Structure formats: structure tokens, C-alpha cells
Length: 412
Image (cartoon, rainbow, N blue to C red; front, side, top):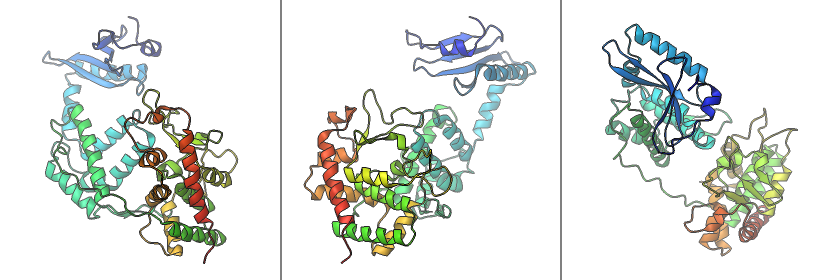
């Protein structure tokens, strides 16, 4: 085998025998690349300690390091070993003192290539808002189930609550739901630590998660009408028209907040009247085999989307007021609209429930509503279609039409 180069690495394939495949570099003895049966490949270096013990040290994954970067690291490790050092033992010792903050950073770096951008952003937000401030200083090996349980309690009672900044998405308030989801995420991070042999057992296992509770608040048709009046008044008073359009779009589609605010315009197929979700690498998101998640759009939703004013070359369906980014701060705008309309207990997620409640009020079946909201329903083969279902399109038209009709009602 010749010197390991990018061309050599790119041609590597998993062993047909289902075993680990190792390729050695002919230029630097002890340096190689390993491919697992799963197709994951990593650079490594073999060396002997001063006591004659053989060690293997993984340098990094293929794709994260180039062959030349990995070779330079391998040469440095081999030089250290020749001087009597033990790089592998030093790494394990360092990990033994790794803090929760350092582990979270390592996890986010590793997850960047395999986790959807939206999920990664949510994980990062929970880590920075709740995990690091409360337990970030603790070392990972010292973390106990009691520490994890206390973290959940502290988040639930609001110890990590803070403002996110003026106009940047409102307030992080904690609560049982946030606490439960954060502990679930922490459990995943600690499983990652276990797989890396940083810890032997996951202290989050066995910690009972707080019940998140179900969202029961939704807007009645009369409340939707009041909100519509408030939207028109707010527009006359100079409120952000893009934010109001986004709120309308949420009510007209039942989409999730993150899906709408970060929606690239290119994902909207106006011809077939749907959104085709994709991930940050341009691959269809939530796709397994031939399954693709589509969100059907009623005619009023498309009309709202078409009404949004965007600067030339804008990539976002709902652009920010300033800069090239997408809209943020919708919760603040919705709070002002609801205060104007005299509505209480309304969050952005309530808009999604209001769409579902309107559909139920019109007599649509649970199966149809699940299709409109893109809930997972076992046995429903329509999720495997690459084109919007005509029945769902008709349902989306009717539900969005009813919501839009109420939003256009005049103030009594």
C-alpha cells in the first residue's frame, strides 16, 4: 500500500467480511487509517512506550482531519513516545479530569457531522443556558445520579432562567418541560462519554424525568378573529410585518416555530404546494430510505408567503429586519399582539395547536390531522410519497381557509 493520501482514503470501503479494515502508511511507520464495518473511518498511530507496551491512539475521523494533518499529528505523537512519553495515557488522564463543559463542547463538535442543524442548535442552546451554568464546572467522572436529579430540579424551578437578549427570542424561563428535555439530552451526551471510555457508567440512567405535560391551550375561532384584528392594528402602528406574516403562517399551517423561522425559501415548492424539508447539507431531512417529510400548504398560507417583502437575493422565507439572517424575536411580537387582543396563555406553540383544533372542529379525522401536522403514524404509507397527498391538500385548504376567514373578521 502506498502513502496514505486523500485519493487512497476516498476509495476505502468497509470490509465485505464485516471486520475492521486497517491500511498502513508506507512513509511513516505506525501511522494508518482504520475503517469500521459501519463505514466510519479514523486515523490512528501505533507506538511502544518506554516499558515496551504497545499503544494505539486514535487521532481523529476521516473528514475531520486531512491525511496530511493526521500524519503531522502522528509524527508528533511518535516523537513524544520516542522521548519516553505516553500520549495515550496522557489523553486518558486528561479525560479523567474533563469537566462537563469540556464534554459538552466535545459532544457538539462530534455531533456536527451527524445531527441535523436544528437539533444541534437546540442542544447547544440547552447546554449554554442550563447545563454549563449549573454543572459545567463538575468533572465528568465525579458526576452522580444525585447531581443529574438536582440539575433537573434546578432547571424546573428556574435557577437557570435568563433573558436571551433584546429582540433575540425572549426569555429562557426553565420549567418542567425544559428540565425533562435537558436531562434527556444530557443522558445522550453521557452515553457519548461512555462510548469514548471517559466514564464507565451513565449517571443519568435511572433518573426519573419530570412529566412534561401536554399543551391544552388553543385559540378558539373567536380568539383567532380577535388576534386577526390585533394584527391589522399592529401593522398600522408599525409592527414588524414579517413577524406578523410568520405568526399568520404558523396559524395557517400548523408548522413548528423552528421550521418556519429558519425556513429557506428554496424549500418551498409552490407548484405542488408543499415544503420539502432538508438538512443543513442539502439532503432531505428526516429521510429514511425513500421516506421524505412534506408539509402541505393551503392556498392562504401560500398567499401569506408571497406577501412577504424580501431583499434581492434573500434566502429566507421570513427574513430578519436587519442583516442577512432569518427572523428572530417572534415570541416578543406575539406577546404584544396577544396583549392588544386581550389574549392570555398564548405561546408560539399554541398556534400549532390552534390549527389542529380548527381541523378537529371541522370534523377531520385524527389520521388526517396527524398527516397535516406530520405526526408519526405507524402504517401510514403516505409518508413515503414524494408528492403531497391530494386528500391532505384539500384538508389543508379547508382548515387554512377557515383560519384565514376568522382572521379577516372585522372588530365588533
